[in-house]
Length: 447
Image (spheres, one colour):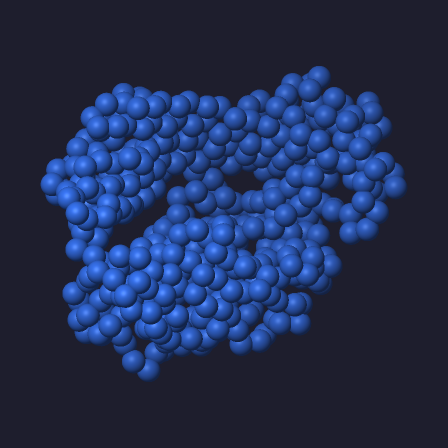
């Protein structure tokens, strides 16, 4: 992508010629390479370079038009500005998006530099070796049907006619392994793991191999379980999946659209057990894809969502913040409509628990490792869920894989039924979170 200063200068010149006084531009480039393997042979190699900009223009009546383009040379920018200007006369008249009041505030965190991408041959060799080690971990493991190793460079920028100008870059590398077993007279069993890092050199490939193999082997000796109410432990990944599925709870845009479990008056109310605290922290040290500003140029930051069980904040764009008399929080995505979404969760213990629980000592506990079918089993506006899961029945540290079962309940009731939040947190793609213990959840088994 062209230099940010060059784009700004071209945009200002074109805007002046077109008589446009107010505009902003958000753009990004993602350069990605990924590989897949199958039974010791390369299966697929993909390389892509995706870039584009979103241009917003306000006319003299303060209505706004939006257009997108992949062409950021002077001619392309001029055409985008002209198209957006023409569209502005058909824009909404109420709650018109505006510049973020924080788009020119200096950023507290500088972006990472891009690292040199590894050769494709190195990606393939590393993934082939990882597949081989998983297959060798147990005779029952016959394949790693889903696998991927990728690396990407991300560059993005934001500028507006008031003088805002931001740019940042970062690199990511990731590996995903998902293995499958085959045994005579037994159902196939599967498990997977994921790791992410700044580059291939610091990617925890061995940790991903070990977790995939151990989980898969632990599912070989499975049994049916009886339906009933159980003490349930959610893995960090499973709990964050559920939290993300009900993010309308603290999403200001959903709240204003009346598509939420919350209302503006719910701030300050107890919605969860006092043992739970949830933050959204894009700049958390563990977030390798940390972004220092959002689509409107607002700096990202640490936001308390639930503090000791109390709903403390909503996630905002500039528009929702203005309507709810709050401050933007750095969670806006711009496009035909400005949307709001979480960045990176940080879940930790709130108040001190009266009792500490452990899988090594408790009996008849369901440990949910991975929730499935979230797209179909979650009714986010009703707060209910019914989801199949992978997991184990745990008795004093002894794990027995569950053949097939479903967990169901009401999310707000689940939050209030949390009886223990472990101290040790784990890194997942969605954030940092410990295991979460929930009492009396409904489990439907086949026993």
